[in-house]
Image 1 (cartoon, rainbow, N blue to C red):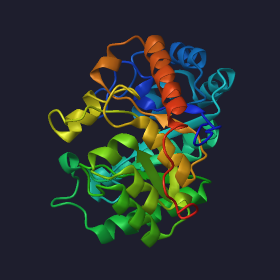
Image 2 (cartoon, one colour):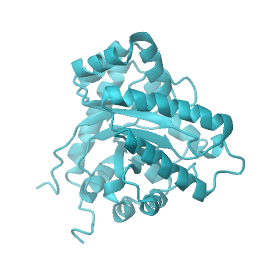
Image 3 (cartoon, helix red, strand yellow):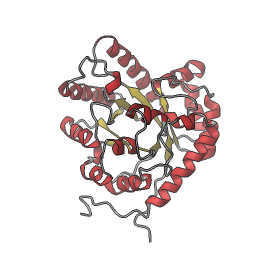
Image 4 (tube, rainbow, N blue to C red):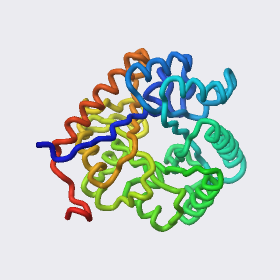
Length: 306
């Protein structure tokens, strides 16, 4: 008999999973026509998609937000996530650029029905503030950003990363408790959790579920190849193809109380070389298999079943 039954298996193809030959901090707009991409995700069974700012604005310039919304509806897309606001703690030119992205994404969210916008921590290799932003300034700025999002009917999800100033899910959870803003939450990504050295049981123990806004699935090799940044944008694996035990991550998040949709974020050279229709079909199938396996993973201790 299965340990758990995971009924909600709605999957969202995050930006890089369905963009073809595009990558973070490189060429971020997809070379593939939006209609072709939506045909592919619909055929594979996806219920949601994500857009990064550069790709979104390229599409909007061509067809407009209203036409994009109609396309999404016609293809059965129920959830749309937007990303990525960075440098929201900065000053000068970096902050001006960040505010421009914020304005664009907030406006798009109102048309596309988006509720959650992903925001970045301060990456070690892309610091906009010499010496790094102070924790006090970072948290105050996040609180202000979340409050601004709330005034627009939105919320922001911060993604802890092992190569950023918020390195672990434990630190992110503590930050959310300290800020206490209902419009500020976390992205919990299997790759970042594992590469930061956090255990899945430890994750279950610390997560404030009311502040978990986005959950993302992926896999990775046992060892990091190159820098953490290179590993995360070039060598992620599809669920079940690596050493992270994606099924156990799914089980842990379910046992912790997650009942929302599941993002799948595969960023890899291999996927970028694969035709979009083939890639999204393969990722969907392997993720579905991980859900089947997750139902048999031994239960994780929680405050409700400890």
